Image (cartoon, rainbow, N blue to C red):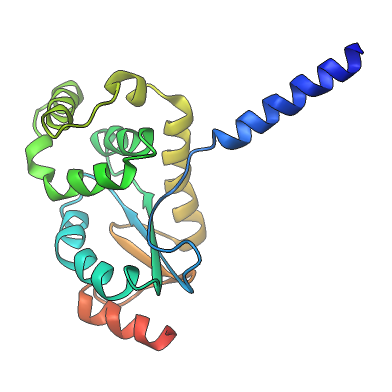
Length: 191
């Protein structure tokens, strides 16, 4: 009987751990034929430009039609970007919304001369935007931090990422100048 109880506890613990895995921030049909991976840093102005200028067109023309899904992966360039990425990953039901809000309003929260001042600005910004989360719990979450850092490590190792944003389409690095016209040409060849 004792062995059965121990096995049951072990089984439930492993089941709980499997369900508590951190999920990627994805936009689009998970079964889409084309997968774009975007390696980004939340403090990168070029990444913010991608979200303001290219992503809306991409979403309208390909993602909303079920042709493409995009996975946003973290490549933090500094501690402020690392903390913001941890915040975005912390609220799974709002991760995409938080990510888009942070990029759309980048200059509103990247303020301060120290990481403490930037964190204060970030926390205030999120509160003003109506996001309800435990800021310190998210920033101090070691599991989320490891997830974010591993994105950066895997990007460097698997795709030789050295700048943001870097786009990967079906596991091939997009080497052209990143604008919607070039991206569209590459996608059309795959459809």
